[in-house]
Every structure is written in structure tokens, then in C-alpha cells.
Image 1: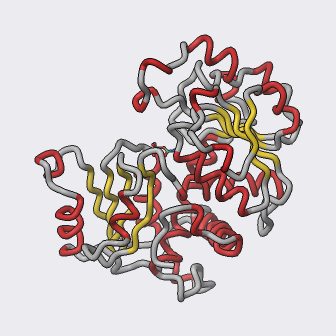
Image 2: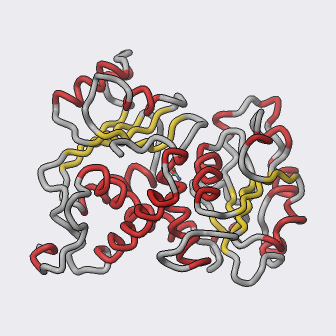
Length: 320
Ligand code: CP
């Protein structure tokens, strides 16, 4: 495969290959020199039209750990703010010899448009497009769940994952539903009716409006940020009402099975979808998810750009 646009593009074998490769990449982080020479001479462009902390930094760290040259492009402060189009931006990147373009864009479909255009030859990786998809977030989430719930090398067959909150605006929810079901997990979405997308009944998952009814049956509960910046005030719930019905606090966390984990892709609205007590508890994997994001994105870049060579050689010169 040349691009990663949607979690739906991944078969079970594709997803397991990425997760297994990410496990190999995670071992690089334990070395004194956290670098592989695999993508030496290749150029990765981080093309961010929307704000990001975790995704942008972890793609940069991932590319650098594989020895690629990295160009960070943020729409703010670029000629995009003078009205330059995606096409002309892409032609500029092509002229600079980009081998991979990691794109985050406010418009759903922008990474697909770039990947199917003749503007650029680079591999395109979707780092979040509008309310559509965020496939590498779903991969790092699956990587985290696998480590805690089923074990390295396995899929997530039979694991029960509850995704809670603003599903309507969440590209993380859509990519997770697609990838988790491919890996055999059973997903339940919990949200107020106003924060569910039209057509959700056709998604391969269950829907509930009652968080307390599903907690005891969850192996992982993933809390989503309420995305106020994408909301019309007319259906914006009050913070207190939202937290009372859909927020995860210490009392609700105690209703989870002992082995269950609490996940959050970040950034968090502490006090709204998750209390500080839960966010800072050892059961919450939010920070671990960020670390796993680097290994997972290393695996994605490696498989798209350099996949014919073994990722990690036993030759000690690798770490030079
Ligand atoms: N989870 C995630 O995509 O975070 P950022 O918006 O900080 O990249």
C-alpha cells in the first residue's frame, strides 16, 4: 500500500503487521541511541492545516528516529494564509522532493484528494481530516489495548470497547470503530443523541445512551473530548449536565472490571468528560498512548517508505 487514508483500508493482516512492526520499533526507544538508519535520505513533510500537539510531534519524532529528513509545515504563518490552494502547496512540496506527506486538514477528504491527485508522488498519511478519520490514532489505540488486554502478537477478538462522548465530531471514534471491528473487538458507542452522527445505526457497533449500563461489561473505555470548536451553540450541552450523564469520575471508574483500562486520545477537557482523579489514575493510559504513538507512526512510515528491508537489524551499527 502507498497511502494510509482510512482505517477501512486495512485488512486484519495489514493491521497486525503494523502493530507487530510497532512492537519492534518500541524496542528502539529502549536503546541508548534511539535511532535507526532505515529512512536515511528520505524526506517526510508534516503538513498541518489544523492545530495538533501529539500527532505532529510524534510523527516528527517517528521520522527522526528512522533517520528521515523532516520538514514541518504549519498553515499558520505560511502562504496558505494568503489564500494558496492545497494544489499549489502540494506542488511546492513535490518540488522539494517529499517522499511522504503527513497531512492534518480541517476538511474531511483532503488527504484522499491529495493521495489521488497528480500533484504529488509522495505517500500520503492522514493525520486527521475534519470529522472523518484519524487512522494512526486508532492504530496506536489498538496497540495500547493489545498490550493491556490480549497480548502482543494477538488481535482483539472478543474484547469489549466502549467509546464515550462527542461521536458526531470525532474522527477518532470512526477510525476506532473500523479498526477495532477488523481486529475482532466489539464496540459500543455511548453519547447523547445530539452528539451521534446521522447513519450511526449502519456503523458496525452498538449504540447506548446509558454509560452506567455498559461500564461493567467494558474491557476498555475510551473517553472523547467534547469538541466545542466544531459545535453550534444550539446543541452544546452544559458542562455540569454533560459530566453528570457522560463524564467518567472515580465512582464510575470503580464500576469497571478490575483489568479494564481508561483511554483518552487527548487533548482532555478535565472536569467535563473525565475528572482529574481518573485522568491521573494508574488505570488511565493517555500518556502511554502518546508514547505508543511514536512507535506506531514509526511502523507506518517504515512500511510505507522502506518496508523491503528488515526494520531492525541485529547489526549493532544500526544504533550508530
Ligand atoms: N489525539 C490527537 O490527535 O491529539 P493532537 O490533536 O494533539 O494531535
